[in-house]
Structures are given as structure tokens and as C-alpha cells.
Amino acid sequence: LFALVLVQQGIIGAESVSYIMLIGMAAFLVAVVRTPITAIILITEITGHFEVFYPSIVVGGLTYYFTELLEIKPFNVMFYEEMINKPFFKEQKRLTLNVEVMAGAYFDRKDIDTLQLPNHCVIINIHRDHKDIPSAGQTILPGDQLTIEIDAQDIEKLYEPLVSMANIY
Image (cartoon, rainbow, N blue to C red; front, side, top):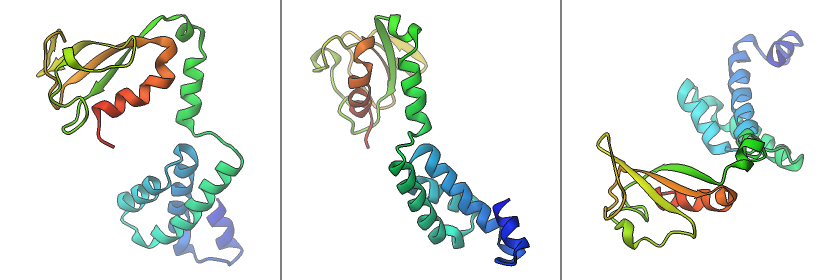
């Protein structure tokens, strides 16, 4: 609508409407998930319109700046905070976390019995080759999906460290 108003006022040509839409898509994605580089590259790559790359950087940067300035939280953070504040979540004593192990990660090729995990964390299952394997005495391999049980009140402080032990960032 903004682009059509600009066309009606004679500020831009009708052929530029799609470019304004693409720049707006990148700005919206930046505002929603707060990942400007990913949003800009994603919109540019998907559409194949590389001429919107530099304008998207400017608009995405401004969007990021103003959403941070106004302290608007990204949607994933809002959903996470909503989840952990629900009564059902607070009533649970233990939670399970499923992570996939990548090659070169901390967990890669480690024996489960010798792992130094945070307190009250237990690897209860390994899913490998479409089979569930009890974790005791096993060596973790790349591609394994680990089921880790943790105390519910520790999810905020342990989620990111446990996921980073299984993945490479």
C-alpha cells in the first residue's frame, strides 16, 4: 500500500512497487526475528532481485535500530517467555530436551559415562539409525539425537549451553 501511494503521488514509478515490497519484507522479517543479515540475504536469495540488497541493508539496519531502541522483543523471545510462565510448565519438575549432535561438537565421540554434564542433567536416550538405544555405556556419534532430562527450573540457564554442546555455532 505504501508503494502504491508513492506511485500515486508520482514519487516512484509503477515498476518499483515490487522492489518496495521486497525491502518491506526484509524489514518485517528483521523486526519479527531480529536477525538482520539472515533476513536480508534470505529475501534477496529467494527472490533473485539482488538490486534490493543494499536498500534492504539500510532499511533492515534502521528497523533493527528502532526495534531495539523501543525495546520490542522478537517473537521467539515472547513465545518462550509465555511458555515458561504457564502454570503447566511451572508445575513440571523435570523436562526433556532433544538435541541432535553435529560432527565436531563437544558431545561428538564422547562416552556418556565420562561426560561432565551440569547438575541434575541426565542423557536418558540416544536415537540412532531409527532406533532408541539406552544411553548407559554408549559413545555419542554425529547424527545421534540425544534426549536429555533436566530440572524444569533450570531450563533457562541450561538450554543454550546444552544445545551448544551438541551443535557447532
